Length: 256
Image 1 (cartoon, rainbow, N blue to C red):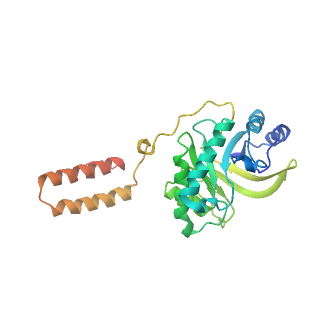
Image 2: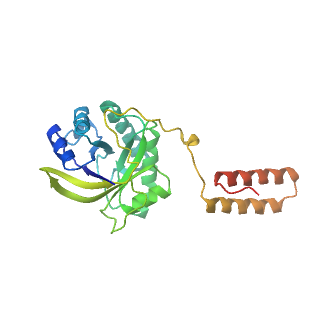
Image 3: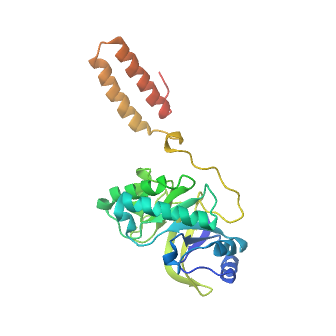
């Protein structure tokens, strides 16, 4: 487990050194357009954080409920995040998180998923993550809308997701005079620094490794079995049998 922070105000070189000395391993900072310069991560700050010995976690947020705009906002924000990442030299293969910074409910999940997928489609050089409540993390993990998960304790009602790579457990505190939030992480954070080499670019969706859930595979096989019994055509039966075996392979089920 690694100790981390996130903050809106840019870190100076001296502040970064003090925070690293206090045991912080990573700092989450904002990839945002120039109009939000008051909280915007730039190359000089990234160098300062790296020189202090910390890692960087990139997060995109212009307004709290921006993901409620669905795919249109996701595409726009994905392109904006990509521009910022390239501008500051964020290495390929690291992650960019998109913030769902409100108490999203079940009625919001569909548009949040569309937002994340549209953002991810613009970021083929980077992994995509989401910041949000327990419910948002659980639902987006279930929907496989992104690959990295940063949970906040806010709106989580005491629950903690097993999918969380990062967990924000306290807001609005101060360390060495720096106003920040406290986090901890558990691996596969997608963090980066200015000295690491670029990691492999994520492949197109069709080429990504995927394992089907056993229960889903068994449900499909049952449907195929019903179709098998409804026909006497030998070619049709052979094709149904082949498809059933392909489903078994996708779920690592032994082929009889």
